[in-house]
Amino acid sequence: MVRFCLALAAATLVGVNASADDIKLTAENTKIEFTGTKTDGKHTGGFKKLTGTASGPAAELKLEVTIEISSMFSDDDKLTGHLKSPDFFNAKEFPKAMFKIIKTEKSDKGFKHTGDLTMLGKSKPVAFESATKVEGGALMLASEFKIKRSEWGMTYGTGKIDDDVALKITVDTSKK
Image: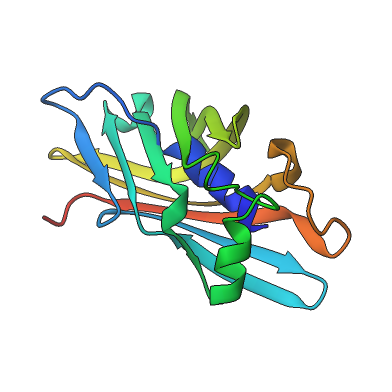
């Protein structure tokens, strides 16, 4: 589950060529959290380091983010170490995950974003809906969705650890 979340986080955080109108994304204003479930419970976590940019009105949002996998944390220190291992995110070989929105369109919940998430050297499409607002040079975005960790090759614990990993993304650059 953690691998799946990290993959999603990585895909959402891709470095971009910044312009004067870009909104800067940092770990202080952008939270990527995950919940992985297993037969006997669940674990939560997130990432402490990421960088990126966003631009455009909400209906045309462009966003790229890069996540530092080594900054991953969970509710269990032993699990955090395991998630960084080759069984999951393989932080030594793949230190960063990236995400880039390719398309944004209106939806019932606000906006649907489609992009590429790159983790473990694999890029896969990810789509999610969000409540998004761009106003006064600030971005507010909130979304909860799931990804399948196996799509990035995270298969450790199959049958005991659920393939679906829940992600919660919160961006609020209005507070300076």
